[in-house]
Image (cartoon, rainbow, N blue to C red; front, side, top):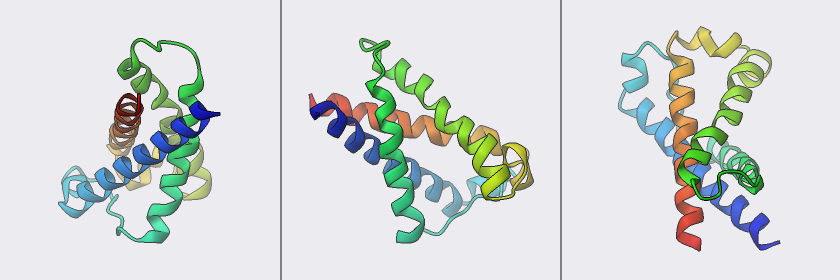
Length: 130
């Protein structure tokens, strides 16, 4: 039970880190410079679901592989939310095309990076809690 709570909480912190990274890149115009239309407002309505989903994705760390290599595990596990974002959320929920390409050709690269940030923040939270 402790691991379930730990990984959910760590994933929530990862979701927060991911969200702040997405917001900062939009705020400073980094995504716009790259031709990607991702620049959300930092509002509770945008932030809360992302934190909760980060926690849900955090349960992936319950999978028992590469436990001695948490940073590699984080990079690999961050591919799961990336694939869902690119091939489920963007085309079917947000109606932004496969891989969100309607937002810009480099959208998949940014999504991959932002979800890597989630994995990194999550694994740091896990390591600090031990």
